[in-house]
Amino acid sequence: MDIHQFFLGNVFHAYTFFGAHVQENGGVVFRTLAPNAEKVSLICEANHWEEIPMEKTHDGGIYTCTVKNAIPGMMYKYRIYSEHYGDVAFIDHCDPYGFGMQLRPETASIIRDENSYHFQDGEWMERRGGHLERPVNIYEVHFGSWRTNPNNPNGWYRYEELAPMLIAYAKKNGYNYIECMPLSEHPADCSWGYQNTGFYSPTARYGDVDGLKKFVDLCHRNGIGVIMDFVPVHFAVDGYALARYDGTPLYEYPDDNSDNYSEWGSCNFVHSRGEVCSFLQSCANYWMTEFHFDGIRMDAVSRLIYWGGDPNRGENLESLTFLKRMNQGLHQLHPDAMLIAEDSTSFEGVTRPVEFGGLGFDYKWDMGWMNDTLNYFRCNPFFRGTAYHQLTFSMMYYYNERYLLPFSHDETVHGKATIVQKMFGDYDQKFPQARALYLYMYTHPGKKLNFMGNELGQLREWTEEQEQDWNLLEYPIHDSFYHFMQDLNRLYLQEPALSQWDYRREGFCWIDCHQEERCIYAYERRAGQERLLVVLHFSDLQDQRYTVTVPNCLALEPLLHTDWMCYHGTVEKSTELLLAEPTEKGGQVTLPLAPYSGMLFRIHTSSEKSMFAPYQKAQNWKKSGTASVRMGS
Image (cartoon, rainbow, N blue to C red; front, side, top):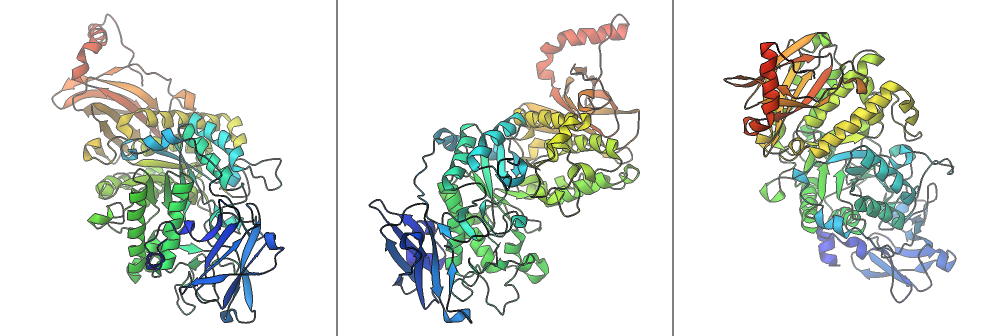
């Protein structure tokens, strides 16, 4: 490692230098950074926890030692002496770059051989690029509460035990990516992994380095991508970890700075220090290089853009510089991977390449779409006419960034209610609205993310202490909703028009967005020669009929109706073609609309006219009174 570049903040492989590294000829080399320490010792199992003095090998405060009889699986800590600790002469710390840690409440690092696992996912890694023009359907998961293990006192499965269950579930339900809530080591279960102590250590709750690598490997070999949440903004305050590591604020702001602590009570990283930037961007690279993660979702990006996430305080130029450098470097190292921003601000250029003045992300969560949409569905249908354009507004700014549509864990906690519970009305009214909502989401441009439990129509808010309410599937309305989500997800994966031109203006066009009084929307999705029509009806009015005119349309082929009886609706399922009446502006079809419903059609054009000859003949017979064609939707 180039130590000078490390201190400038330009290094992406610092983890290959710092930490505990198993040597080919035996023994382990330990290195840590503690520039303001008086001295540093290693204490470890190999020496019966007796101190082993570490040598200061660089003026910047790098300490090194080699222990010949240390082996993988042994525990260790750094004993750091500093006059700045106050009442104590030293504090024992875990390794900031450690590849393994004990399960909380224990705090020691664990030696791991980072080269012991051998991936078998070469085929996936070679073809995983091109995601901008492919469907991306993400299932967001908290490993500890997706399913609980009856044979574990904490209810946890190991990484390699979760893999076959979660892979089978994702494939069955039409998800092609799994997003893991943070898996770095963290002391508090209730932080969900967003307040870390071991940034390079897979949490011991579910196993170790090799177990997590096997999880990712098995996902890839089954056609499932894996994304990991990454937290480059703040860290846990626990005194055995990064906080005041060498007795001084090394990773955080100075004590007299009001920005030292975040709104969550954690310590904010100080991104003006090069060694902190190298630590964080090396960590992001570590997960993508060593574990083959297909991307990372960066949490709380707004806190990197603005001081404290508050635009009124202005831009944090040091954090922005760090973010640009990190994203640009990660793209150079992993050009086919995803970088995703969880950002609620209106800052411009989040998904623009750094070389063109942007922040360099591939996708940005569309928090505006999420809030507008959920607020609309909370609204009494009587007032939805007034709120009508909450659902058209997103397409006014959509092409400013590359957006991803999220219904994440954040929307199912802290008194916000689950997605189904947010729907207006009583129990029976909520489900048809939720089905229509999800059809709107999955036909709207942008990649998709859905949090675990949403597909069940879960009513209880999520908690990390309890598994998903799988027993809900015993109830017909929930089971029907679950199967609706399966079918919708599969259509999303199968239909190019729903993803291929997500970020091209030709991929979407409004057919009708001025039915304020009737709460009807109609739009078209396109990709190449593929065309789909979406008709949505979000009022509670009965016996509505709607005439839609679609340019260059000969017939509509029903692909999905949210109110089909098989989904606990009221309409008998039919996929028979609906022939359009020709007009100057296009083919015209009149559709019956059930309350709170949506329909998805394939548009057949005049270029396919020959295939419709039998249907056209039947249409003519119908007009003459000699025959009829079933036109149900």
